[in-house]
Length: 107
Image 1 (cartoon, helix red, strand yellow):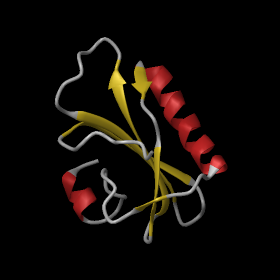
Image 2 (cartoon, helix red, strand yellow):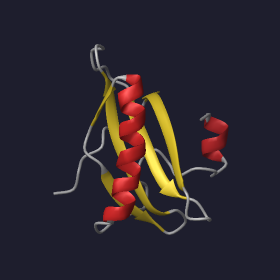
Image 3 (cartoon, rainbow, N blue to C red):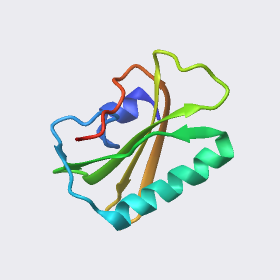
Image 4 (cartoon, rainbow, N blue to C red):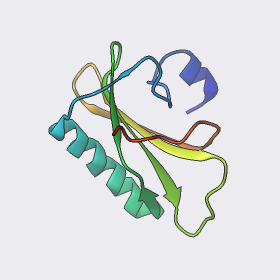
């Protein structure tokens, strides 16, 4: 992902902006976590807790931060963002080394 694509609105933002906390959506969360877990196993990532939000434009969005095993955590954040496309297919975006706040799971 590059900044131009993000600015063009082709993907949900990396941070939940003007979104509300979403109610549980087990099938969506399971699909997103399955994709994230597959990538995490291949890339040696440790996944954080997912945060589900709802956007008027994108529908339900699942975001989760991850760390890369064997590397000291630094000030930059790694994040996975999942959402459904217009055909109800799962889309996922992986962003590494971003200057964004860490996710805080809702209480």
